[in-house]
Length: 252
Image (cartoon, rainbow, N blue to C red; front, side):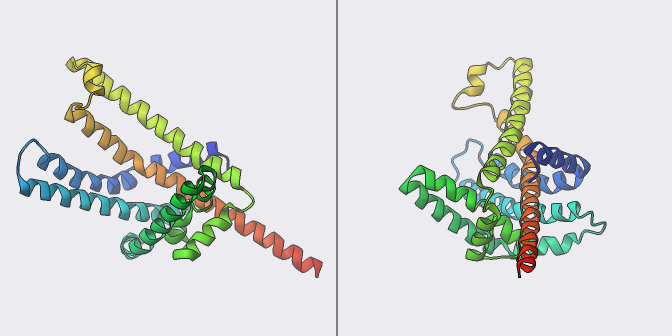
């Protein structure tokens, strides 16, 4: 398996090379967010409350779609496909949303059951089925078949996979938080806003907007990382299966 450092390096390189493409799609999330901000300004209005709920629903649905579409695009980029069928991938992402949601529900049920029993089983199930949703997206599997495929990807490499699931996203998250905190702190210092205000229950709206914008444009990096991890796992698993099959034939 590729080390975390290589996966991170490759993720950042892909994001850098195709920033316009990936950030352009991610930017669509800011449209419903802008609507949420506008209608959530202090006003006692039932209509605005309903609109806020609708914008939130639109944002969630769009985020779900992007979480499917971007891995499909990244697979094409990794394969160095010069003519990516964007319209086909966009339609496919919409079509498999129900399957992804169903698998997500199965995952949640398994995780919850594991944590109710003991924390350790919950963590084990988390590693086993971490790739289930990507298996639906990139492996064209559904339901329990996707769960079983995810489990197979982790077989014999539990700790290696657990490390990559934790270390990579944690490193990205820390970098994002450092950049966001630095930017907000600079703006706060220039405008004379105290740290207590920033960390209080009602921070300035502009700080929340900055955080959301950075988070939105950083989201593709996480998706790229997990896609690369999935592709690496499938490659390693396929190679091991081929070797085992060849060994079995030699034994015969």
